[in-house]
Image (cartoon, helix red, strand yellow):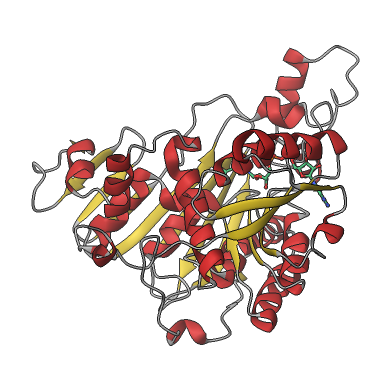
Length: 412
Ligand SMILES: NC(=O)c1ccc[n+]([C@@H]2O[C@H](COP(=O)([O-])OP(=O)(O)OC[C@H]3O[C@@H](n4cnc5c(N)ncnc54)[C@H](O)[C@@H]3O)[C@@H](O)[C@H]2O)c1
C-alpha cells in the first residue's frame, strides 16, 4: 500500500506502553501527537520518548477522555491494565477512533459485548494487539498448516508459562497492575498469547467457533513462597491467601470438533514457554524442544528438529522482514509487525487482521474460565460474538499482515 500519514494517541505508558510507543514511532506513516497516563511522570516519559525519537512534542494528558476529544487523532494505542483497557477502547471507538489494545483477558462477558457493539455501531475497529500472531515460528507454522502439512487439525494447545513472581509481588512498589488480579481472581488471566495464533489456524469466527469451555485450577503456593523468600519478615502480604491457583488448565471445544488445551502458569519457578502443540491427521509440532513429526517425511516414530522446516516454510512477511534487516524490535520483532499491521489498517481506514470478534472471543476465555473454576469446573457455553455470522462472514481483507491466509501476491 502507498503510505499516507495519520495521528495517533498512546494511552498507558508504563513498561509495556513505553516500549510499544517507541516501536510505534518507527512504523511508517505514524505520527504520535498525544500521550496519556494517569501518573504524571509516566505521561512525561511518553512526551520525552516522542521528542527523542520523532522530534515533535505530543500533547500530554492525565485523563484519557480529554485526549479522546482531539479530532485530529485517527487511532489510539492502549497499553493500560487488564481491567481498564476495554473501557478505554470502547470510549475510543465511541469518540470516532480506531483502537488497538494490549492483551489481557476480560473481566465479564458484558465487557466483550460492549466492545462488539461499540465497533459495530461506530464502524471503528478494535484490534487486540496479539503480537504472538506475528512471531516467526507461529507464522511459519501457519504457512505450513495452510499448505496442508499437518492434515486436518484435531487438537492444539498453548499457554502462558512465565515466571512472573517478582513482577506480581512487587506490584504496589512498582505501580503495576497484575498483583490485584492474582490476589482476587482465579482463572486463565492471560489466555491470548497462544490462543490468538491457534484461533487463526482453526478459522475461529470464520467457519468455526469456540463452543464450550471448562477450567480447573491448582492450589496457590508460588507467590506465598516467593514473598517468604524475598520480602522482609513483616511484609504485609506474607500471609495473604492468593486467589489465583498456580496452574490453571482450560479446555475449549470448537464447533468442528477440535479441542484446545490452555495452561496459565505464572507463579512457580520455571523457564518461559508458550507450550504450543499443533496436531493433525498428518503430523504434530511441539514448541518445547522445537520438534516436529510429519507422517510422510519424518523417520518413523521419530521427532525431527523444527529449524530446517522453519527455513523452508518461512512466512513471506518474515522473509521480507529479515531481508529488510529490521531486527531491532521488541520480542524478536513480532511487536513491530503487530504494530505495523495496526498502523496500516488505521492509516488506510480498512479492516484489521484481528477484529473485534476475535478480540471479544479470545478475551472472554478469562472470565469464562473464572466462572467454570468457581462452579467446580462446570462446562460453560461460550457466546458467539458474531451472532451467527461465523458460518457466512463477509470476505476477509487480503494483505501483507493478513492472518486468515498467506497472501503471497503482496510480496515481491
Ligand atoms: N503483548 C505483550 O507481549 C505484552 C508484554 C507486556 C505487557 N503486555 C500488556 O500490556 C499492558 C500493560 O502492561 P504493563 O506491564 O506496562 O502494565 P502496568 O500496570 O505497569 O502499566 C499500566 C499503565 O496504564 C496506566 N493506566 C491505567 N489506567 C489508566 C487510565 N484510566 N488512564 C491512563 N492511564 C492508565 C497506569 O498508570 C500504568 O502506567 C497489560 O495489558 C499487559 O498485559 C503485553
